[in-house]
Length: 353
Ligand SMILES: Cc1cc2nc3c(=O)[nH]c(=O)nc-3n(C[C@H](O)[C@H](O)[C@H](O)COP(=O)(O)OP(=O)(O)OC[C@H]3O[C@@H](n4cnc5c(N)ncnc54)[C@H](O)[C@@H]3O)c2cc1C
Image (cartoon, rainbow, N blue to C red):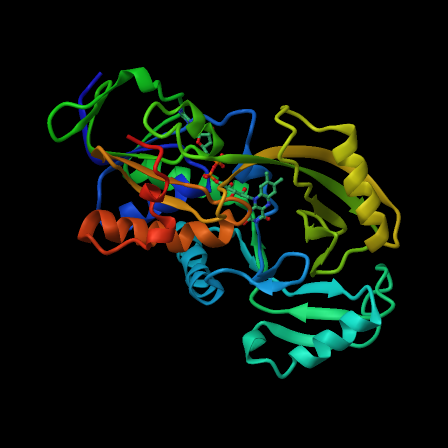
């Protein structure tokens, strides 16, 4: 085996590892990536949705302006470089469930907080195939990425411009001689861990309080075939073919099992029936486990006792919108020492030593 020398060795190529790999290559760095897809394929299962207002009461999401501005140029830049497509900006429609809600949103039309985000307040039904008799809001700046295609694209880019190893990283073989990191035949300046919930097996970062949050999804076929994202109780994101939809998701912090559950599928079917008038057939179901944190903020930075060991994780339920922006912050910190906000710095957890 020939010796390989790189600037960074990245472990894990989900959304976190992919975004940071792209940023490092763009900065002219030499990289090697080790990733073996596991049963939990969190980034691939994701519907890839990005939406600047989230939660039950549709509040503007944390750092919406910065992260959304960033992602709207980040993904198209990679599409153009690789001559492919995986980024689909699309309006998001959310039906009203009460007249009070309708009135509340009418008042938001003059609220500067929703400038550029609230596209339209619709006072009556927009889609015959939906239960939306009271109308609903149409939001801008939303859309989805085809996460599978995005990850495959970045993998191809890494193969062409660096080194890629489709294998499990054995932590026991990571050696830390003076000023470098050694893994088998690879020598790197630093090692970046982007393992999602699998960080629990990492000997240096297993202490961070990761909160695994399982989610189940469905893929369905229906007569409803509009080009729009629908979100109420569940989201509906257009699939590959007309009338195919990705439906998600459940949020279950207690269930650690691998695989779909009857409860999860029933929950999604029940919520979907409240939203979709048309009949539907289930094509397949899927599941994944999100790497969430107690304060719902990403995690990045160096291990407090060894600055060669770097983590990028904790993307939680919003990997698609957080990973581009924070991978840029991470790389500017690594290369130029640009500051990282305390609220995302790994050292906010006092459990590492
Ligand atoms: C059902 C569901 C729906 C979702 N929908 C959305 C959505 O619509 N929009 C959104 O923004 N977010 C969504 N999310 C959240 C999003 O998927 C996560 O934020 C994101 O995928 C986390 O990415 P990650 O790279 O940190 O982790 P992962 O995707 O888990 O990637 C980690 C990678 O590292 C590999 N790995 C780990 N350890 C090793 C090792 N020792 N050796 C080699 N490889 C290793 C793993 O196999 C994996 O490939 C959803 C999540 C779920 C579960």
